[in-house]
Structure formats: structure tokens, C-alpha cells
Amino acid sequence: MPRSLAFFTDVALRVAEGGVTERHADHTVIRSPENPTFWWGNFLLMPAAPQAGDLPRWEALFRQAFPTAAHRAFGVDTPDGGLDSGEWQAAGYEVQRDTVLTAARTVPPRRTPPLDLRPLHSDADWEAAAHLRLAVNAADPHPHGEAAYREFVTRKLAAARAAQERGRGAVLAAFDPHGAALSALGIFDAGDGVARYQTVETHPQHRSRGLAGALVHAAAQWAHARLGTRTLVIVADPDYHAQALYERLGFRPAETQLSLQRRPPGP
Picture (cartoon, rainbow, N blue to C red):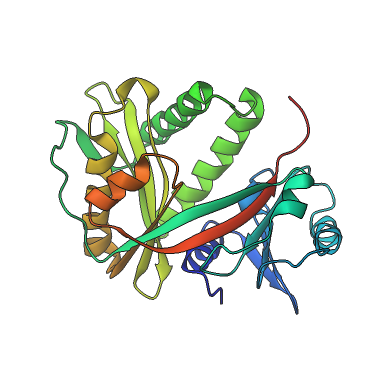
């Protein structure tokens, strides 16, 4: 079982979505067979931070596990984010240190927009969630290719829907009166009374309206009532404003999640 709370929940959610794990003597392989281009559904989990000179061995292990993959992704199963990253950065890897925040309960946000906040349930709801993700990607300064990202989103939401139908959690959204999803997130049971948030995002034209905060709080209440959650876990980029939002809602930093990824070549 992973020591890092972030990877404990990550791995649990990948399995809930239909993924599988392969445990080896010095690492774990996480696979998402139904979504092979999902970088963080197909990765290697290291038991500790790699040492100087380890990169070629880890890349060989990744190629062995995923011989056709264009990406590279490694999680480090420690809670402190410590790593001498020069060797990895020189090889083109992004070194990500995200903040892992936890809360027993959330604080109601200062404002709740007058919208329909609820889990997705119909085909139209799930299609609206897909449109939201595509809009967020299109507005990103470094978007993924449209066709490839559409395929990824279709597969990812199908896995989330299957997990939701099995009672493992839910994707919630804030809907306008016309049925468009303006903001959305997932929250899923990771076991041991722990629930993990996933993919909190808001349409670029509807940001700064309190949508994400309202959804995070609504999802917490839903998880307590439906999943029996005792600990809520959410992960944030420390250089992005979302962490401050989560802290206003009652979350507090607990760990640092360390990840190493190299994007596929191409534009």
C-alpha cells in the first residue's frame, strides 16, 4: 500500500475506474487498459526518490511496462517531495511538487451561486461534462491536441461514470438553466473513510463566480452522507490560486506529492 496519501488515493481511484496494479520488488506498475493515453493512469510508482544515475534504469523499467507509450510518468511514494531533480530536468522531465490538503469537513463558502449543483445522472449531463473539459483545454496556454484530448476525455468520463454507477463516488457539476455544465469535479471513495477529489475545473467564461468553492463544499457534504467519508483529500498546484480557495474552505496542507513526467514528442 502506498505510503503517500496522494498516491494511496490515486491508485485506489485508478483501480475503481477499472485500472490494475502490478507489484514488483522495487516498484509498482499502474495500468488503465481502457485509457492507454492517460499519463497518470499508466505510470510507475517508485518507493523512494531516485538517486543520482538512476534515470536510465527507471526509463528501461517504464519501456518494459509500457513498450508503446509515448509519455513517461513516475510517481514517488514519499510524503515530503524531496528530490535532487537536475538529472531528470536535463532529460526533459517536468518535476511536479503538488500540495496534498486534507479536511474532516469543509466550511461553507461565502457565496453559493443560484445554480443546480448535483451529481451527473443522464447522458446529457455526461455530455455537458465532456464539453466543459474540452472548453477548459482549449483555453489553456498549452492545450492538448483536440482530437487526442477528446478521446481521452471520452474514456476518462466513461470510467468515472462506471465507478459512480458502482457506488464508488460521483462527478458533480454546477448546471445553468439550459443544462450546460459551468463547473465540475469528481469525488470518489479511496477506502478507509478517505475520499479524493478529482479534476476541479470551471468554464473559462464563468470563473471567479464562486462555482468551484460551492461545488467542493457540496461534494464534501455528499461524500459524508453517501460514502461515510471521514477524511477529504484534494491536491493542488502550489503556484495556482486554487490552493488558497481550498484553504478558505477548511483544508490544510498535509504532504507534498512528487511526480516526474515527460510529455510525448510533438507540437
